[in-house]
Length: 304
Image (cartoon, rainbow, N blue to C red; front, side, top):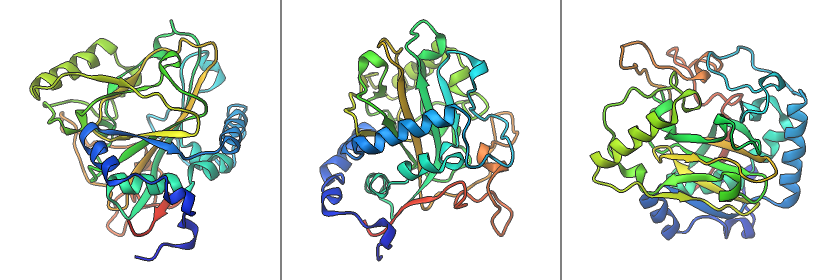
């Protein structure tokens, strides 16, 4: 397959792609820490653009407000901020997130020829460790993506600065991507941000026992410009921000080119859904189109 001109990498960027050993490690452990994918200038631009976003500047807004949209606004106070669809609402943010090198790394890890954005969530964790929202309980992303056919979706966690234990970096449960799961009622209507941490800790422990596995929690220390990628079935969370400055990042959720909508039901028999379902165009047979370029743009296409 010929690589389209907009997706050509420089030799220096090509050298940053995961090696076969890196891919094997990702498959075994469920996560991968990249080399330096973003420059200081790109991250300075990203932070300035998100400052503008918090001040209310938008290039466009969603045509419909989905039922479970994460959309922090100042009236919500000094909680951990989550804002979805920033890649759609801000062209300046999108220009950074759609860097082909990020998509190329994801394509190598997922074994895919095409990578599209699935969702982007802007995150601001204030230095208020006693605030309950400051800690993110254990969860894995596929729980919320029941209507996606792919099992190879992944997330790029992009901090704007050095990210470590002190400021509440992302923490992985090593190897949990390979676990088989106990029957679960987890779905997009029971999002981790509105859940009791003790309940999700017990679900994690039960699944570990079911797999005869140890819960080994690995905080990912991410130097500025590097990116942490994790598989859609890797349990992860994060601790409180104990630093004296906000922890700022974007979770860029990515889908391989084969991903599509499928009908799925919740345990009570009602239809499962994702926020996209009221936003994206429809396929010829009437299904939500997770390849809609307005909401789910391609960030990499080419030979592996």
